[in-house]
Length: 343
Ligand SMILES: NC(=O)c1ccc[n+]([C@@H]2O[C@H](COP(=O)([O-])OP(=O)(O)OC[C@H]3O[C@@H](n4cnc5c(N)ncnc54)[C@H](O)[C@@H]3O)[C@@H](O)[C@H]2O)c1
Image (cartoon, rainbow, N blue to C red; front, side, top):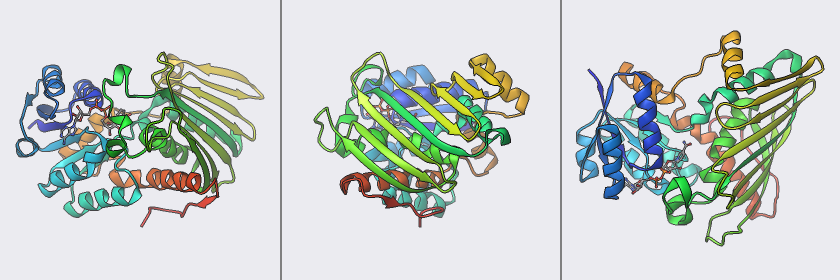
């Protein structure tokens, strides 16, 4: 039996998930989409083969699993409605405006016992998988520092085709929460727990409550000290781009680009640049797989097994985002970050 999937929200990221589901080869059907913006609903329906439905309830009645692809302010209410019916849920990042609300979403999912997955999709990026393998090599020694820059044109224009990221009541905050929640997640996945942060933010676009520059300094439990710089500018030729430089005792690694690198490795025995083919070959040589996160979600739901990354996995990056904002609001005072899963 094919899993029946419904989409709440038929915009930019819904199309991405629709395509990833299509190429996943899993047994599923996208049966319904609901979006109050009729044009978006109809375009998604045409692309995915779903039918449009007029209400959230109608959608929830027709499916086994739901993708919550709305703006952030709707996530909690919709996840709770799906969880109350025992439906599996894939919810986009950030889960919520802050840690407290994210914890409420996790509680709703765990109380209902539903399969749940969050859209922290860069965990499945092949280039970050290779970077992790290079950093983890004994030959690299310990990680000493990381310089992480993430920039994109402010996503109220261009390919995003929507403006809600300029409305604090829908987005909650700016570039750190909305975009760099991925980066806060990756930093701990790659380098272990952060124990304290300092932060500073700035706003050039004059959108109330929405920072377009966020700079954080992070201290890791392993001793490394890193920085994250997250910027929303107006260079329309730069939709989204990440650059990470990792300085280890005996290795220097540079990753550019979110998915297929290139990744550059410099050690005393030479320099290697991995392009897309090189990344695939090197991951294969090391026996490291990478997956289609949407296919993995369908398989987890079909088998009734836990999915990953789960909503609970999003709690640490939410904790870090809150800590950076708290530091920024207090003139850059260091904020301690407790270990483990937040309360
Ligand atoms: N994982 C990623 O890399 C990634 C990338 C882009 C966006 N996102 C996330 O995806 C979510 C959506 O972003 P987007 O870029 O697709 O925005 P979008 O504006 O393209 O689409 C959002 C849609 O949700 C609809 N909507 C609002 N309330 C709704 C409701 N109650 N029921 C049904 N539909 C509703 C809107 O009408 C809109 O069409 C956000 O949480 C965003 O942070 C994640």
